[in-house]
Length: 246
Length: 209
Image 1: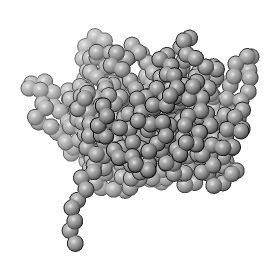
Image 2 (image 1 turned 45 degrees about the vertical axis):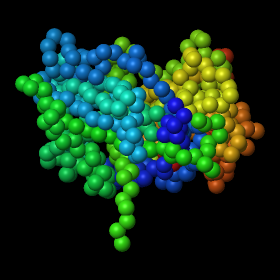
Image 3 (image 1 turned 60 degrees about the horizontal axis):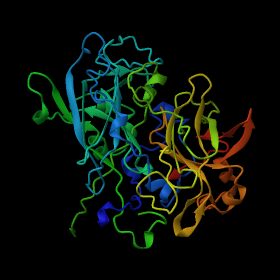
Image 4 (image 1 turned 180 degrees about the vertical axis):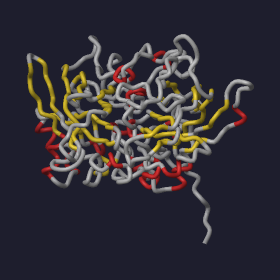
């Protein structure tokens, strides 16, 4: 427990070049929802290097199985897939016990949400959400059906590429991240204003999950691999030691 | 000239939480019941030590309109000013009945959000400078491309606030007040009002943490 790598140092400065700016006018909703003032840079204190800790017994056994966790009188319609990967920090170390929460549309591109008016039907056997804690290797997996693309009100003919939303807790509140996973080969990725809000081709590429044949389940499911990187911590503290922190 | 390359990984890019964030993070708000155990905006149990408070407010866009599809999370210390996390080794008691984390959605009609929690104690800051009691707040929604971090301080802590190292980092004194929640008492309940202005007049201070 006392190895320096187990210490909770401050997080590295966030590299904003991999993230979309707050103001991305082709994604119209961002125009009125983006701060105009500069962010105030904070040196980390205990408030940033700590964060909520979750327990396995808070989750149910089917929480990471979207094929079964809302099945009422049959299975959901669509391509059966496994999505899996590792959550690591910028140092390449596994992020253990991170809460990974996912949500998505059904195979027809319709969300189970009272505000979704799209005419594609709700699937009575599909809820569209799941959650899992990463293991000691930072590994997670869940089973689901491949979501469909859908139209949305932005420009008149904008369609979202098929995607799964991901939320990650990390183990410090400053690591908190929400992102979206896309699927290899989807032609809608290139023109999506939400994807294009990221001005960094390499950063976009890391959101596109490749087909992972090694993880296919024979005569059952295809698989996609999505590795995620959260912010890394300093291991050596020296003059940057944070008061009250291990 | 070629030099050795660092092998740090790059953080995964953020993407907006979108309008349907509730499905994944608060399915009851989306309109259905799926998980046995749901995370909520109530941080306390009867065993939790400390003064019960409610935090409520709206998140307002650049046109002055409240966001009605926003999701907020708070992270705070317990009544003695200690975080329930192994990195916090301050010599203060833990409260096993208090994780210190909660999640709330704004109301689809009024845009109002609420948290039921306790008022946190003061936490040690950098260089031995005590931070005034505060709650860390994180905000995501459709149209927000990367989560916004800010802090909630308390109007009845004027003396501690005046010495707080983070509030004092804000060069424009006039902007510090955007982080102060106003205390009021309503039918015996303590309510702190905290409106967040994402853009425009009196824009809330957001932090790059």
